[in-house]
Image (cartoon, rainbow, N blue to C red; front, side, top):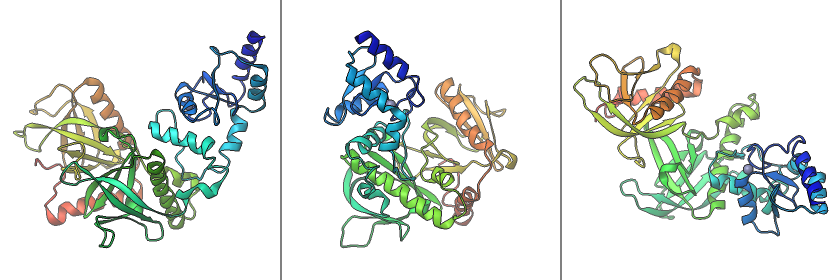
Length: 383
Ligand SMILES: [Zn+2]
């Protein structure tokens, strides 16, 4: 009997939709939630279990015994039908996480689907309203302590403001349309954190925040994405929504320590924290600095950008060196391992191969203007 049921389960796995995890698309799921009727991966099964058996009852496909009624339920539902029910009204701005995404995003996605049933009850989606306020712990600009700060998001004003004292003027006003948000970058060391990145007076500024409640930080993230989408829809009414959705927030393609040298042959190599944010390559003294020490726009190949292994004649080779050529200068950098160097070259080369969008060119112009006007920030100057 049990053996027959196991065979049926294995057959069901071959049905369309069941071959990947119902929640994160990871291939060859080994678990199931037999009351919901879905096939899921090991990681998602842990999240399902943590919600409690009143929400989800988890079983291993091979190692556990299957009752007839449980097999019947799996047959009746399956991943495709479950999606129709539990993902019926996922707002387009919502980031549907995949298996390699941060744990909190996956966990909140699963809880939103089955525990809070947010996607069958849109009135529960507080993040689509265009307004959100509350306290977030914000890292100090000069010191590393986190302090509670009131944040207010207003889609109508295109602003995200934060206040040190509620009865005073905001400490900073960020334009939502010019803001990038990265969910819990590893360097912060807090899995319920966000990094805000935006341009201020021609220089990038980073703000690091967190909230202890995973659901709240997830809601802030989605709220900013939703506000951005709505504003883009107004600005570009003819661009299809699925296209706009790709421009809401962008994870950093890569971050890490590199050695860099200045423009003169006599300049020594210094260790810096590098971040590739879309077409912007920034470097910092420390990973959690509020401002980059320097930043460089990486343009399109035909406009004079290229990257290669090695350094120019006369420059010291640090072992895993590579050179980035721009119309202005050649930048000599070095990674700490061969694999790391190859990854950097790959991610930067991917940017160089892509044509520049008008929005990206505008960003570039703002960075360069700063250099031309004030001379106080020279891109990649040996500071
Ligand atoms: Zn999964």
